[in-house]
Image: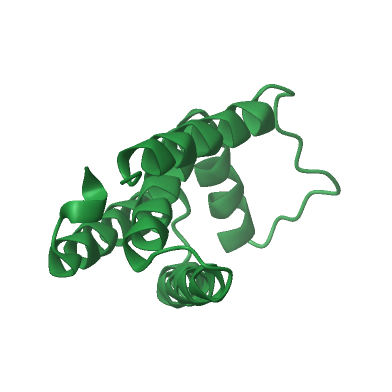
Length: 128
């Protein structure tokens, strides 16, 4: 389904997913340096993912869809942790550092599950 869509629309979908994810992360982690640096990091990782995927024989449409869907999955997966991220960011802004930043046990598996489900959806939708 997505394999037949124009590449420009897929790039638009990836850009929208990047903006949504970076906006959510900037809201959840209110640190000025993070807000500036994180979009460049996530975009660089996406470009690298697309380039390596194409070298491995995946189509451009499949890699762009995988990037966009994985970012949405990551945003959904990190949603339960948002209050902890915000609390920890405010503490860091005040100069307080903890020895351990403990997440509840289920947060990480939930995030991984969300990313895998959305990557599976992207793979299914880009099959020709």
